[in-house]
Amino acid sequence: MVWQETWNRINGPNGMFGRWDEREPYQTLYAHLHDRLHSARLIVVIGYAFHDERVNREIIEAVNTSDSAEVLVVDPGIERYVKSSDSTHWEPPFGRREELPPDTDHPV
Image 1: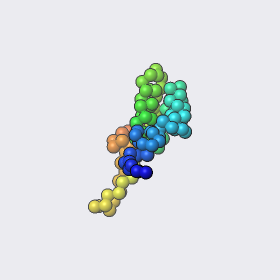
Image 2: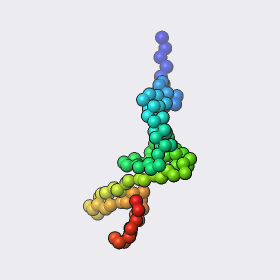
Image 3: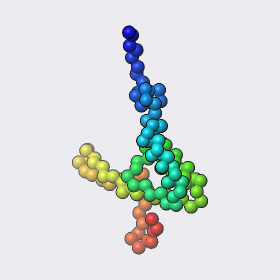
Image 4: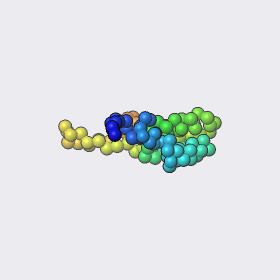
């Protein structure tokens, strides 16, 4: 018997099990996400870094196909440590910051 070595990732498109996001329970979870996003008027995103392209596409499609859907992203930013100065600083979400005067009424 001759064994052939394979270098395919187990869960890759050519792997022995196929794509992980097309298997259960993930396939069902994505279907539920699709249904909920397309029926939502407000999509609240908390603690998600937008690294899953399939989820990103679902969010974009839900907003683009709805007349009233809105997305609210809750992201407090991150505290970074700077070794060279032995200090920390706060980076706002998405690398930018909106600062409003304290008396400004700004809807979230």
